[in-house]
Amino acid sequence: MKTMKLLPFTLLTFALYISSISSAYAYLDPGTGSLLLQGLLGGIAGAAVFLKIYWHKLLCFFNRSESKDNKTNDETDV
Amino acid sequence: MTDLSSDNSNELYFDSGSFRDRTNRIINKDSHIYRVLNSTAEKEWALLTSSMFYEDLVHSQKIVKTTQLDISNFETPDHDDSNWLAILEHERIPLISYPYEWSFNMLKDAALLHLDLMKAALDGNMILKDSSPYNIQWRGKQPIFIDIPSFVKYEQGQAWVGYRQFCELFLFPLMLQAYKDIPFQPWLKGSLQGISANDYANLQSFRDLFKPGVLLHGVLQAKLQNKYKNTDKSTHSEIKNAGFKKELIIHNINSINKLIQNLEWKQSKSTWSNYTNEHNYSSDDMAQKIELVNKICSTPYKHVWDFGCNTGQFSRIAAEHADYVIAFDFDALAIDQLYKQLKTEGNNKILPLVFDLSEPSPNTGWRNKERKLITERGEPELILSLALIHHLVITANIPLSEIIDYFYSVGGDLIIEFVDRNDSMVKRLLLNKEDNYNDYSIENIEQLLLSHYKSFDKYILNSGNRTLYYAKRN
Image (cartoon, rainbow over all chains, first blue to last red; front, side, top):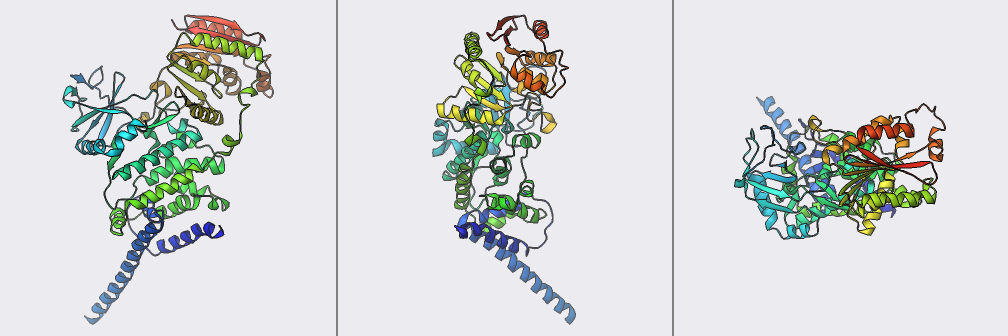
């Protein structure tokens, strides 16, 4: 029972953590947060979707950092 | 050929509350409710009527009975450049009401109906494209869904677009009442969009976070909305690409369904049943009053409005003779008790509504025309105002002349009770107030009734403290 009660907190901490690593976007879409949340609300299968979205965001984040580094190197070469 | 424009001039006669969804519009004409559809809505309508679940929902009276008519027999309103391809006629609902006029258990049952329809639709590979409680109306205690074009084809990978609206207009208002005992009606009356996740989350204490639904639907949704309010990427495609499927929506709906089933308004659950008996009638007066109201209502009047109905004792008497009775009271708890009783009895002739006569539902929404005054939604043949006007005059400080004038403007005949200053309730109301209510007198009410109505009958109840007037317009 105690574990059950703690589950939402674990999810919240997790969600807050992964939401903190996304990049900044521009322009209003008030439904976006609610749409993303539906991954978490879809049970285990949904959590997988939620994770996949954020995994993708994470990869984009690193790819971008990587390409930025490459670009800097190229520029240095020139 | 039926001309769908209004009778006078070429003014459009589209319903002023039906405009947000561009694919269809409602037209009121000669007590008929029509809906015109463009090509998109026509395709969805064809899909819906060919689905297995549609007939079941109509048969179980969960959605409004609808017939397609031949549009070539109609002339759509002038100045309308939309290309309407089909026309439907809906069965008329006796009186349109709004969620801010419903009690807790009414909003709860409307929410459960909405989830029910979502499940049925998803099983048939369709979905409801929005989640507005304004799409649900009442036939007595029976909630019924009226916005047929809300049913659209479910596209694989699509999330539940109406989830946020469902939270704002169903879930948060219900949780607010159940968990914090804060009435949702004033909030919904002031905000047609409902309660935002952010506002809801801001009201929560640490302890509240442990209550079902608060953390995920409230706090986390608010956080995510704030986090992504500036996003420029289509979340729809992102979700779809990540493998979102309808089973996830069904899972969410099932858990919200369970959450709402378990929500209780504690006061409504525990309070009963001496409510009606709290009044200080002598049993003799009460019996006499019942007999009189019963006799007058047997005239019969088809549509009766009972203002200040309490738990509906006289609404029931009226309903024995009338087609339909609207039972109004400002006390949401009394209305909730009445609704629950009507549900138990299976009584579909009375619609209970939370309604404060001293600050009635306004004309509101876009151009102040989207949601309408009660007097624009219906007209009674008879008004009951029993044990009410002393509260309006003394508690709400409304002049008696205003009250009689208002009742007359609403329509129909009137049964009105005058309770004099010897009555213990009147004494109680005046206890801490200066009695400057000179207009509250038997002479004045009789004069006012005569200046408005054609005639009245007068019945002095046995105690001598209460007088019943039956005022006739014609």
